Length: 547
Image (tube, rainbow, N blue to C red; front, side, top):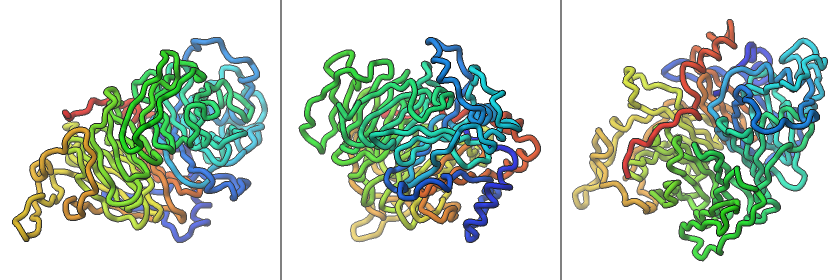
């Protein structure tokens, strides 16, 4: 969960208003106004020719209290971070929603000196002296991890400083994707996938403690593309997988790794005989890593997402198909094709009942796990939909404290520079009847969508692109132009909505009433809000449907 610090609007958002006078600093919803509170962006010194060379992802990472080390501590040199980094990190309070990734094309952040200059040091203390230096540095707090060009940058999410406090550079390839696991047991909680296909796992806390610009204490997988030399497109920790993670590649293959095994272990797989068919192959040796290869599709896998309980894995690809797999059983459950073009993004509802997808057809598709097909299309974007997410912190006004989800709130962003918010209530949606008299037109009715559709699609089948008249349409609740540049990602947190442009500009929109409650004592308000609702990554629920 991302929180904000005191007085951020005065400096950051005022400059934003000056740079983009045509954009409003708020948008209205039935609950009230969402207000622009502050921004994050790359420093002015970042070379613009680096923009657009790689697809940049942003990950929110929350470091908990430091646990007693189970392994010998690192050499003293790795703890010699300057007071600028120490004081900034020590200042951080609050939490994140665990690991949520935002994809956007362009740059964010830059190589910023962390030698204890006054700007960074002032976040945690009144001077930039080394008096704060200590090997007990905890690193607890919320961080923003993102990649630009050949570097990974780490920012203090809660500070007014737009610039990163840490940079990590790669010499032979560009980092293109990453994921964070706040429940990691052995300290390695950050995955980084490279354009070359290489993958690293590292400790985020250890990177913050080190003053260098190279990875420290890293485990290296698929070194020099020994298993697969195509570009990594997405990485994800398996929820509850005790260190297991998956890596998707641009050639349509997905690999399963175990963090506990040597990253250099021999692992070879048979040649994929049919590029159009899903297949799974396991490593021949017990010590091999990766332990399995899933051939998903022909062409790139663009995005992957696990259901909250880790039971199901969703993938979307260049071929326009959403595929949903039973992860433990390693088989295809269901899926289907977009109206046209590639699918670019996907996201699960917290209860695992629905999946959002967005892509090149400008539509937001709502997929039902119960019906195993598309049950609604969201029309409102004027260009490709590049980011979708459910708002798991929003409560339906009709729930009346029953705990049952009656209505879902979700959001989408696109290359049309707009943020759209949607409300989905399946019992009130207008559903076209699938059967109609010969020569007649479909009739429409309201009520439970399951009573008006044909029986659920058979397990293990991919549905063709549906007809426009067969899918109910929903309209957005809010449509707001939030950036001057095309958008590519969003995150919902307890206090805010975060939007990202592909040029590397991140805006934090505070929920109605949050800004006022934090103005007097932001740290107390943020700590209280964390206790009111569990963090996103800690909400492990069981799927409520049967296949």
